[in-house]
Image (cartoon, rainbow, N blue to C red; front, side, top):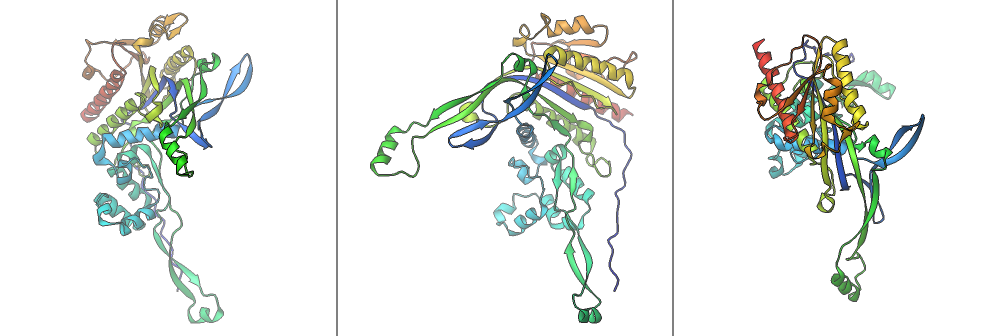
Length: 454
């Protein structure tokens, strides 16, 4: 009897051209008295997350520790918003904000096969079919099925580590007698971990203090003592000799106050596209719908809808500015680090956009800037407002356009440039930052219509 061999099958990759842009956001936000990201509890003390930050001052680097919010904290909130905004296209666990993302299909298999009927009803039919048949599917077929049906896993990525298909192997007898009677014994064993991997279309940084805040000492942590007031209950507990758990218990929580900065990148073209075969798994209307849902989720995130400990430590949130870059073409441009001093952040992003447009013919870059109206006279660069600084220093280098209430967002046109310069849209300060996202959504719509015409 000959050993059986598993046939190697390689997915066929389809050529395709990028249709939708890469979007990069740089955000600066002031958070006072926040406990959004705690990392450990030592006794009755809950500590805030801190990270080491290297700082260059007068030619020398120094390392200091500052409060921070993890990318995982931001990612959890962002994916929760996506799930809430598009519930009809989510799996069971994503719908309840537990993002295990089919990482262990054998766990799902056991759960569905053994759970009560009332719980089984929570799983949509596509999920039941996938779990029952995944051992007979190729990695790209598993990915395709998940992409079609769960927007969170499509946008946020996933890693399935237990999707091995069953194969047949041959095992020799251990003794010579067995080898004579049966030269090889057939045994069916599961194939070791065939991983199904989909990289996230979203990239999130940590939220860290801005460099100017670090240099001027405007970022710190402090321990706040709290007491659950229950003096009468504690008095009764003492009288009846109840000592198991103190009813009036003091506890300490570390809070932080700081101007934070973070980055969010979104590759909209990757949404709904197989990472194995490069084919479009969903139709274009569904793709654009998912792009807009994700943009709305980012908007909610920037609004402060993220983090923990809000029942007693809801932070005072003051959004300062958002700088977004939309790059259409095969080159993916990101804004510079928003943790830089404001002058460097704004200037470097614009200068890099100009450089990209000069060096690469296959990319168009649009920049969108929103500045909090309450901060216009405080966020200064060389004594000038950010908008005045940009107009004075870049009016001959970029195509600057203000967005005011006379302009209709739906009339935003696809940008074509003869002189190869970036287009910068400054969102009028009378609008909230939601206007910035509406402008980007309008740009997505124009690309969709342009694609249909061609």
